[in-house]
Image (cartoon, rainbow, N blue to C red; front, side, top):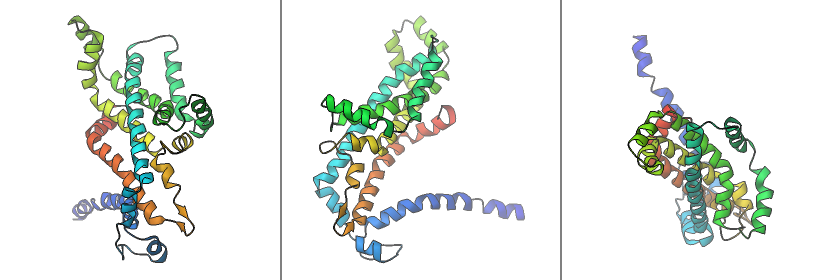
Length: 271
């Protein structure tokens, strides 16, 4: 009887764990439908004065919605560049042995060990000299310093799991390298590509320091816009909550489309 009772209550552990994880998201959503005065004045599980003014302000103010557009532009550019560069690099590391290959692979990973603040000033001076400051490509290229090594590391693990006999069989059948690579090899590691793209997207989407340092007006991301909501009466908490809620949406959409790849990545690849 005790064993059966324990089995019946096993679902409580994951239930409360998921509830604990979802609580901050719910509270952010709850605050986004409140005014700042209500947020500061009362504690309530639901909005007492339900309002859409916070979302209306975001969708009608160019400063706000352009922040989302700017973020999506440089994040997509960065993800495309990072995965495109990492694919042939990861293939070389997984299929060939050359002088210093392990040292080079380790050096790539050391770029992930340094904080973004270390590179903020060098990037700022470099892009200012090249007239790339306050452009989408500037932030995208800066994030490549961190995302390309990460993508190479993830993809190399997937590629090493593919037998080399697949390459040899394709060569015997007369496949040129790039046709084999695009038509046969890439579909084989589709899960790895999805995982690498997901992590590149998420890092670039949430990174603030470089994005804020390398932009001012034309390419200012939403994370930088959210830091400028102070007024004479204080911070507009409802507006910040609405903006924060909307920043979750792109990541949730990406997770939805690559969820199967992510699951395979944790099971098979180097994640």
